[in-house]
Length: 196
Image 1 (cartoon, rainbow, N blue to C red):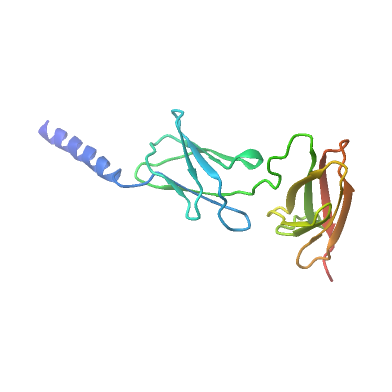
Image 2: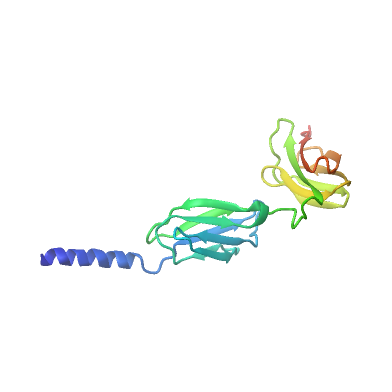
């Protein structure tokens, strides 16, 4: 009986040492084009408690978690990303990496502007990630497409929208359309021809 009690005490001691001085979770968030977005990272625990930190270039640490799975929410607004049921292991840090692309429309009043999604593709329909999207009207502004060749933006009703999309190895392609109340959500696929 003394031997059994000693063995149990040793097992309990081993587990307590294993759990000492480790951090439960590290979340690393980056833009698809590189760099670290300044967005909130929220960890929702099984019992309902939520922990919130702002993303940093080196990632953010949540060290005082248990062993139940957690949900991670990154960002807010229209580009919120949720990763569900992230497993945690006792004595081992779980590292989660996530890509985040922000909204290009910030605080757009409802019904005040068209929502415009442009998609850069080659002639076979393959997305051209990182394509350069240059608007000339109604205002000169440029964006880089995400890894799937997409750019989301918006302009006021009644505006003529004109510009071009360029990508290395392809001839630039022009686009032109009008933002109207009759068609407030515009989704355009713009095809680029490969240079000879």
